Length: 276
Image (cartoon, rainbow, N blue to C red; front, side, top):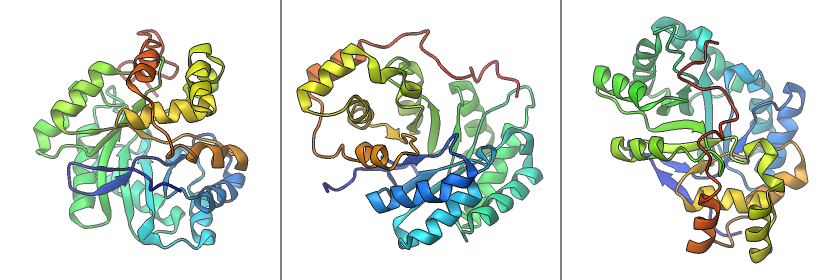
């Protein structure tokens, strides 16, 4: 297999550009799914407290027998646990469920601005990083104004912002803000929750390269410098999703897929108005 690409984060840490997402992966299937992914060559896994599968993810990591130093494990702070002290407690709980001594990346899952606790939560993550309990710290679903506030109040810039991003919702202005601030962009729902796999434009580019639509969309993320975490519970699709390092999209392919962008293409909640 061709070497997997990596991203150098703003704190100097190296993060795989490709990994496994386990949103909506049932708790009782998580261990086998993670095991199948690690056996296929995946080295990054992205979970979250609210996914309620951290224990299964940890079991999958343990049973796979892969050297911990080769793995990059991410989990996230849920909204109900925001706040300085509660974030520290939530981190301990997640780490215990995962069965790990340290974490590679910890994210604030949503800004949840109506709570107005994300700055205090960020201060807790800064402490966890300073103590060496987590390698990199970042956020998820933050808008530029949220990013600028936590940077302004703490002097610490998130390494990553994980956001909804796929060819029908390309988040170009947000990516421009990330580039200006030095924040890496990570895509959740990178396949548009499967809705893109029947798109004729994607199918045409895929046929050109002898690849599947899913592989083509994953490659689009990689070629745009995005960190991508496709989710699957099917072993054959898990293997297919990682078979993307032996080709690249050319400028025409990228331009064609860029044309799918739709300002109304958001599938998930809007972070500016979400109240959960």
